[in-house]
Image (cartoon, rainbow, N blue to C red; front, side, top):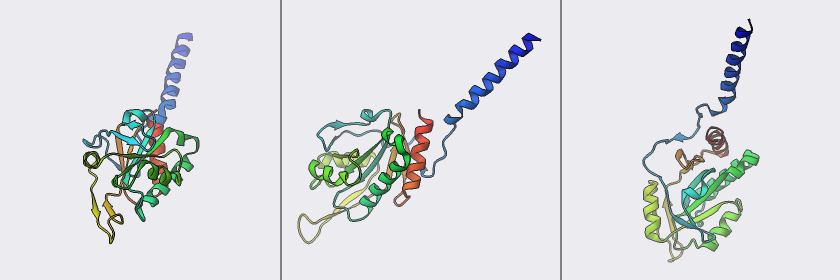
Length: 199
């Protein structure tokens, strides 16, 4: 009798342990799942503080990566605003997320300019920049397209560019592509899922 009771306890304990592991269930995303994609593998750029950065620097955090430029009139500030609002919804988990803004306009986006621009959204956001060739190479790695459109004066150009956002899990793997205009709730939901299932 004792033997049966003992084994019943062991089995029940195993069931409870499996239930406790339920938070590692397969995530459900609202954005496009690009897990296993053979692009967007890494980058090497300087941040606006002068530190050379790669994905490995942010291991343990979800990384939100967006290509844009500080003179962008609409898409870039709208996206940065959505991401900032999403991180507010995350509460304390926002500390486990790093937002990176890669400029496609290195001609004008100096480190000082990037710092000033991003501070309007969050002091934790980092601006990344490189020389024109490095920018082109890394944009190609992420399948980002951009092109300068000349204005009426030499320094009044605009940049046509891809407008989606990439999200990496805390292990440094590219997992999601968020389309322009998805909104803060999509960012908040999917980042929460990545943090929940990548612990």
